[in-house]
Length: 498
Ligand code: MN
Image 1 (cartoon, rainbow, N blue to C red):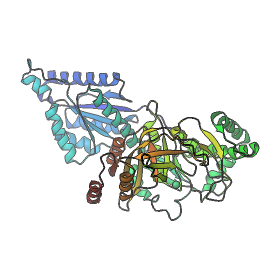
Image 2 (tube, rainbow, N blue to C red; image 1 turned 90 degrees about the vertical axis):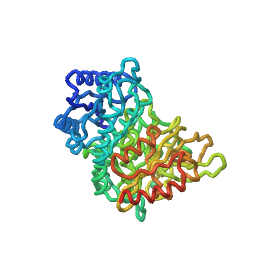
Image 3 (cartoon, rainbow, N blue to C red; image 1 turned 30 degrees about the vertical axis):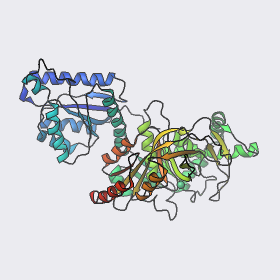
Image 4 (spheres, protein in one colour; image 1 turned 30 degrees about the horizontal axis):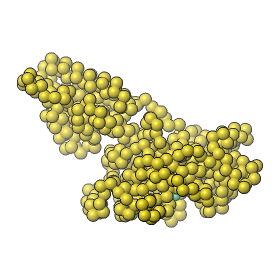
């Protein structure tokens, strides 16, 4: 379901014919060696494809248009080995629409003091050529990432790897299709937003269906399919009856199996990658989708509760951005629920009514059937667990009326070692950076929602780069956040993003 694609990144070297064929041959040779070594290094999650050296406006324009139209190309990495006049990049850059990396590196690490002469200087002058190129990209106001350093340096390669993940988020955003089978929860402000503007900015197609349309798919799931999936659940998770009748419990679980299968068939048939529900609008569904939604999220679908399509789309993008990460720890829809002000263990207990993705679970996962304290449906089955300890990032995309803002908070999930026997939902417990007090104050001042998209496997830098790549404001709350500086940033940004 994650639409696994063989992403590639193109490597474009800038030069010109002023230096003669011999120099151009050296340039091409150097680029080939760099690309080969980067591909062999094992640090980059995706392949880099070497393209012929670009020496004039025509070749540059052609390359960028080919990149636009290539299904697998997720971005172009540019490097000016020698001097490449900025004007020759204008036409190509104007037409280019995918992520752009300016890799400011140099073939040689050291200055060859004994042998250096003017030929060497003219051939190895990215310090010079990359400034000319950087100037024209800045002048044209084009978003790009700049990474500086020696190409063999592992830290530099890790920065490229990190940018590649952001680039996947940028290119995939343009393909995201989301279905709403429930409007925003009545009277709630922060989950609202301008869906037309979201399509213009992010490329998201956001469609509405009646809940009855998807409920028909649930009704059509066969008894045998339901039974098979319930068997999978019983094999995969620990059944926590807690005094309920075994048969009645299984019947409740079976309702979620039907919802999982029906919803998934609807999503696949109509090609949607993310979904929102609303517990106030369930029509023919017997239970609020709980376990079903948790399972769909773990398969890579985006989800937002109470009609929150902005968070659903961000969860989907996080799923796509992290799908190639080895030993990924998980990503989920999440909600700030209740605080611990206990000295030394300040933090926020994260959960939702039901819908937390089991990819973030630490240890065994249980199934429970419990009453929902809201709404008027039968007791829904849900997966319960606590989450892994470790660092992660929580983001909230908000609509300020005239523009979008992405709040990005570095958080640290703490081990949940005190049992909460009466809490029938999955949860995480995290401490926001720089601490609960400043982190929560900054979040509130910046207008962040109670819903977030959370991932262990992405960094604040990647999410801020994603926002910048989309041309929207990113507000970072990190260990360096001071309230005074944040307030100024918000004021200045109000002018900058007018
Ligand atoms: Mn909620």
